[in-house]
Image (cartoon, rainbow, N blue to C red):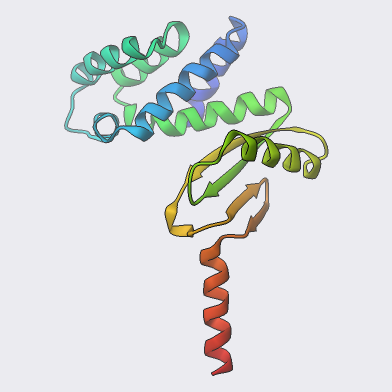
Length: 177
């Protein structure tokens, strides 16, 4: 379902030459949902009716400056009672845009937020590994990895997290003991 909604939005955005604007608005909304437990509850909870979700969403989107195609799309999703899947729709849309632009997306997990310099260095390194393709980063923060990074690019994954290294040492000590 998420793929169908994302594809319809992508086709419409392409037709109206608004792909980058829609992408930016959806990224803003996704970051807002990720950063607000109340908004996440509104999006996920079946307790709220379509009308309630639509009103609350309208206020949030107006305050965030999200407009035109993205605004109409999010309101449509709410009125169709599909808001619970909106983050999957945004992820699918992001994938379609990346494929259209010839970009690859790398999923990066870090123990703490990365600085702009680290992000640029990581993009440059991944661009070299991906054969010169532009790399878009999907960065998640997970303090449980303690330190280091977990990077997934296509089917390849590099786990240099401190948690993984400590677990490897723990297993080696058990086998040696």
